[in-house]
Image 1 (cartoon, rainbow, N blue to C red):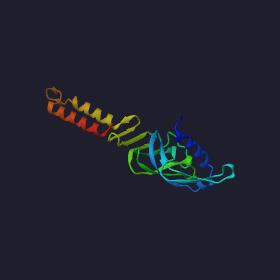
Image 2: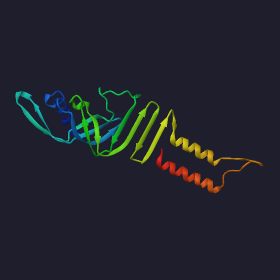
Image 3: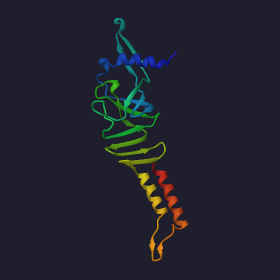
Image 4: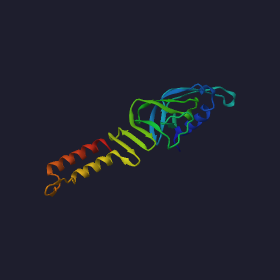
Length: 194
């Protein structure tokens, strides 16, 4: 036997989405169940009364923890986002609460407006890509294939092999104390950047 809630969710979607009772729905609270790419699955926190008329008899149901999939983390007016488009995306922490909204009142058109705990922030503009990741506490930044961490790695390698011309020719490698300072610099950079 499959997930008993899956059938309930499918039945409710068929009843709710075309129902005029929900045409005014614009905001709702929810709990984040999982993150998948630029969407998340949430459990609706509120109870909803559904007015259906099977067999010409009015039915009222109270639904709690309705699972809603494909809630967008990148907002857009028409619900479609070009993958190459500039965007700012806040990824909420799983298990925390968010406020979702819909410009159409349709549960299939929800997007996250606000979250109580942030797991990751992503900003993309052209070739610039930046992220702050709360799961590992690191920052990444890249543009045209060049990363900030890569730049620091290149700088550390240059400093390790630095030679200075003197009156008697090129100097030797940096002193051991300088090498240990460069290694400490590399370690510190890797605690912040990825």
